[in-house]
Length: 373
Image (tube, rainbow, N blue to C red):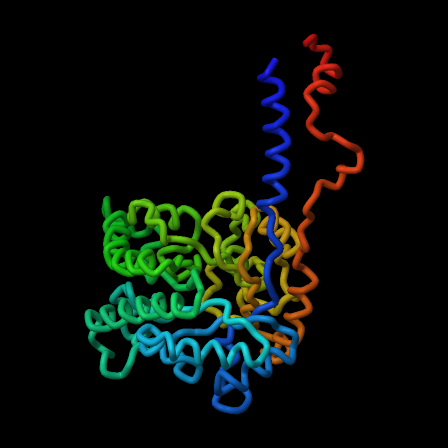
């Protein structure tokens, strides 16, 4: 009858593991990119950290492209410099949650149709030179990975860039193999970065986003396959981009929770009309059916998201990313801290029905089931 005793232990272990795997999400934190300006307190690391701390935030995510906050090349070379950066953040009562390389990552892979527009993200001496721009971007993202290691952070955010995005709609008909060739080249450009990330113990978390080759679950899986399932490939979860695509953002967590290592808390809404839908008719953000909103003003089910992420053991930070075409960034930031706090779940360490018994006991179980010893 040993098999029944083993089954009882498996059931008990499963219950214990379920509780052990659940995590309380950290937060609130805030992504600083959209709040930077050339006036106080938004123009330097010390002042902006003091400002967000006064609003109730506990952490900051730093854009690695803005030298008002960090010199990412120096940070990749010098742990001493990283300690100084970390000290400024800590002095304000905050933690440095992650670095973001969205703009540099974008430049790792740019289709020629977008060269002129994305040159805005590159230094002046590289504009008009796509090959040199790509090499610079690769070095920048590597530097950010090294800097993350110096800062004691094991995750980093980025965009994938895009080589096949102009062909997202299959008209004109795509030549056979075009998408596969694009993802093969995308992986080729990212693999040296991913290898470096693995060496320094940092997971690359791609923000799945329209305009990027990695824009939904299927395209993420294409990239995974193209990189031979590189262990550094992971995800930044931002539900707002899925709302605009009519993608089930809750089921997405069920599919990809093991890859989700970062979380942007950003709201959105999608209100299609008889005149415009997903593609938006080339309209400005305020007139598009799909638009980003401040937290609580959109339609994202954050209660469901925080529940699922907690259930699956996400232990990273809940980071506000403010983007709204109506509300001011200051009001969005002020309201965002409490919104996140109200949604963070302090996970239980025991089952709600533990009071009713249910402990593993082979003798009792056998008796209940009518099994003779």
